[in-house]
Image (cartoon, rainbow, N blue to C red):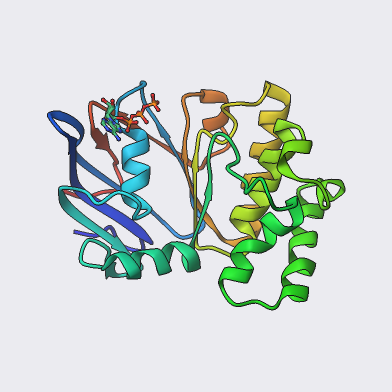
Length: 228
Ligand SMILES: Nc1ncnc2c1ncn2[C@@H]1O[C@H](COP(=O)(O)OP(=O)(O)OP(=O)(O)O)[C@@H](O)[C@H]1O
């Protein structure tokens, strides 16, 4: 059932919110290091698919396999530990911790994984430099621009060398110039680290940075990679 060589695969996922079906038999897979864009009209189920793949939302039925392990059968604690260790996240509005500096925000995933404070700060600064926002290191998220905040969020998503980054409309709140730069930096950094990216977007311009597109319609996905 799992496509050969895939890192993350979903088969026939179904999820309803009350009587509203959000996913209605969605199958999808991503290979290591691959950048896949998830496209589709508003309300088609893109975010629900991403949340299921990331282990944030539990589907009503269907199977989810990550690195050969059945995600559906994992406990909440196992899924949380997978999210912390193997996954990174970027959302539309950075979702940085407002009380921490940008450097501390980027260092946070490393600290949660047990990296010592000094080493975490050093690595976080390297990532801020890579994303060209090292001048935000001592500032809090409320003191930086939207574009800078998203770059900090990308640094935070990649700092702990995740296997997969989930990005839900990461440039949705940015102007086109800033949006394109964030996409360039996200995809370049992910490709050089061998990190796969699952990218939900409305915009064809953003999807152009992916290796492959899939389209969600009415909670269903057609992924030609998936042999059913
Ligand atoms: N927490 C929720 N409670 C109730 N209904 C929900 C919830 N989340 C999503 N839905 C419904 O499920 C369907 C799919 O929503 P989803 O957010 O996955 O779509 P989307 O394609 O990401 O939309 P958009 O592009 O507008 O963000 C929609 O009908 C939506 O209203």
